[in-house]
Image (cartoon, rainbow, N blue to C red; front, side, top):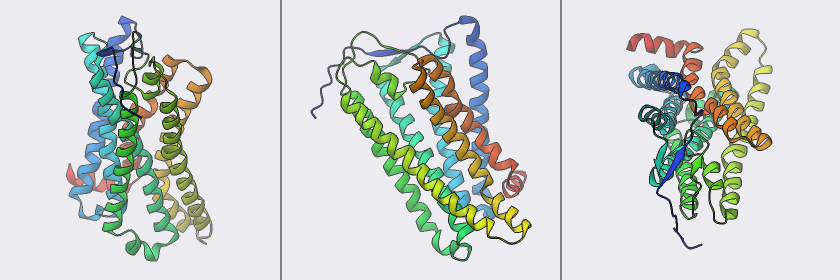
Length: 305
């Protein structure tokens, strides 16, 4: 396929969550608060894992990477939305839209892959505890994270390049608060068959394959926990993966719920509102889920603060 950048527009319009002027200050304050809590909470998790030598383990190494990705994930969409509300402008440049789309797809993919790697870490820790330090060594952890980045970058680059080959004519209003891939493709006035095929393949790669790996890991984990004779031992084993299971349920539940509901209702504005759950709310809740249920994190945070 040869690039055919015959785009006739220089900017898009982000319609946001609501066009009611009276709601704009409320939306601005709410999203600013959630963004600050997200950045602060995830930053504290990263600093705690770095500063406390007891947390220099594979589980917390992966957790700190997830926190970094969540900060970047939220920073991709929310600041531009806040600037548009503050300046009472809905515009985003064509280049800015493609760039925002690239980083959004990148960090969504990283979230999916990192949650899968964390599930594998818990699988080895519970099902093969005697071999845990040998299997989950530092080199393997770095290699797994590097593979997550490579796959996510390649997918994001492909998706963005496919969009950059599309032609856009007059209708440039995006019924969303950021440049969401599907909404941008729907605005194209050229053939989008190849884009649709790539999106379906990417959805299979980013959602179904990691989810299958997570479900397989937890099926083995549950079997191992049930085989433990003492109730205290079962509780201790389950507590080591309860936080991760909560985050997986929240992220997959909200993200899949958004796209399934949008496919059923075909309501773009409703999809934009519900996407706030996995774009903003989930990254904000992750630090609380991990810190409130984790004595090591709470002890490290107390030492750091």
